[in-house]
Image (cartoon, rainbow, N blue to C red; front, side, top):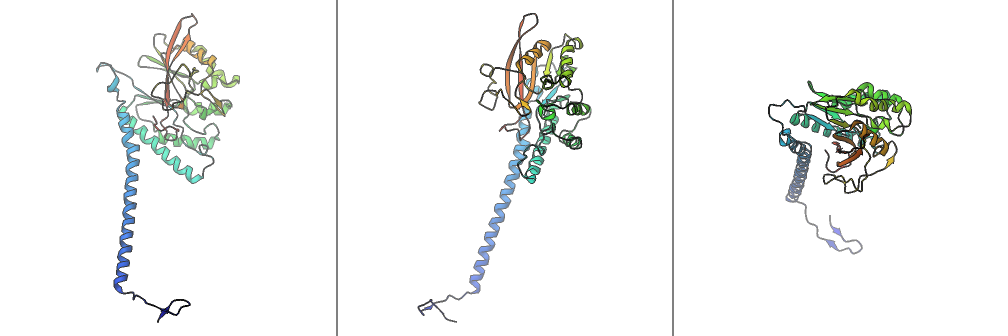
Length: 345
């Protein structure tokens, strides 16, 4: 059949389609498909490599630098008790990203759980601490959950951070994401204590007294909520060995003056430590309560969490006898990949 240009009637020369043309097209299509598959394989392998590097190799190298032998000066024949602290794991739940789609939250939760679990396992493998203590904010929306959901999240938390045989594990320090801050319900407070232990407690380890203190409840205006923390603080000196140095572990940092009490070079954020209050949170304990805690316990050092970033300052206070004293306070970084920091603990 002869093909002509429209409206001209001029014949158009037609190239015959031969088997050679078809073979060339098939070969080109096959080569292109092979290249696409090659790109996909390379991309997949690269992604797996990146995940493996940041999930396994980087944490392993960092934790390896914390080996006890790197900085301990104890004689080899000493029987020492080693403690690891973790602050703000804050496992992801439906309250973490309420405006996101559920399938998005599912993948974020799975990835965040895996990251925390792997790092925890690496820490336990390399450092093998005798005692591991969490500094609060175990959950993200724990203060909002009904009992059934809370129990389900508790089981999930225990899978992320499994307890070890012949090792002590303390998880009783509450965070504001666990019990609240401005609004604390007695049932929520009691539920946390029922499953994790007394919110205020002390233990003697390695000739030191570790004081685990619920400063959040002490800050609450309701007498029913603050009573246990108040009674504990007022009686602590009659209960502990006066010869042992004291270490305070709490969730919310004590009050500081950010303009003069700078956090030091290891802090990731270049901004001054924030002094703010919001919905169920407060970045520091009030000045009056902070000074009372310092004067009463007179710690050698304080460890806190909540801020998700590192801060290392010197706290100043005066004893009841008018003696000026000081103590170091370290705010710890969060180990969670969802902590909002580029470099996690």
